[in-house]
Image (cartoon, rainbow, N blue to C red; front, side, top):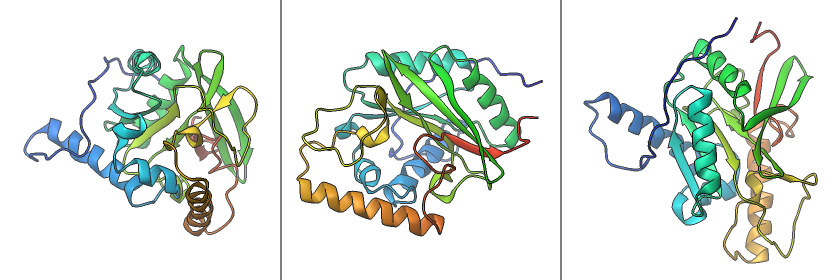
Amino acid sequence: MLTRTQGCAAEPINPTATVNTTTAVDFGQIRLAAQLDFFLKGRAGCAFVALAAKNPQKYGWTIVPTNISSEAIDHEIEKGINDEATSTLSLVFPSVTSELDFRILLSALLSCKNIYLGQDEMFNGARCLGFRVAVGELSSWASGFANFHFMPLSRRAPCVEIAFRVKPRPNYREVLKEAPKGTIHLADMDMLGMASASFKFLWKKSHEKTMALLGHAPDLRSAAKTTFAIPSGFLS
């Protein structure tokens, strides 16, 4: 049976700050800097998030190192929902460094009061878990990242992370792809008045980059509605 560790919420830190590598706390800073660099360099495939990673605060993107406990996760979710400056929230788990740690985190996510499992489907031998964050009456799809061999390349970041939107979708004049009613996700990030031509260019670039990373068209394992694609017996 899986157990979960106890802990309290950590304070946000600047993932781009200059660090001294001699302390354990600074090691966490280095890992967060590497995580942001993953997005900056377009390794997630999304050109929009690569742009936002240059200045997360400008785009309402808050990145928080979080302990592995349902209490800590729920605390940060509620804090992000209530923070007017935060529209996208990333919870990064630098202490998850093994598959056992990852199993404990998944157990903690299943125990959260603000998160529920909206998808649990098999696809090509992978169990595709879709965690949803309750944001008022909206269901926010959480995108997951982790440095494990079974994760799609577009999700294989240095640290384990869940990222999701905590505010309703902006009132866009044009939507290129409609999401299911009542759903919000990372693609709803407000690009702050970006011209339509630039938006469509980044949209096309994102699809091309993602296909190049994966080596094939995106499927359920890498879809926005899937948080983590794990081996079928991973939680047994």
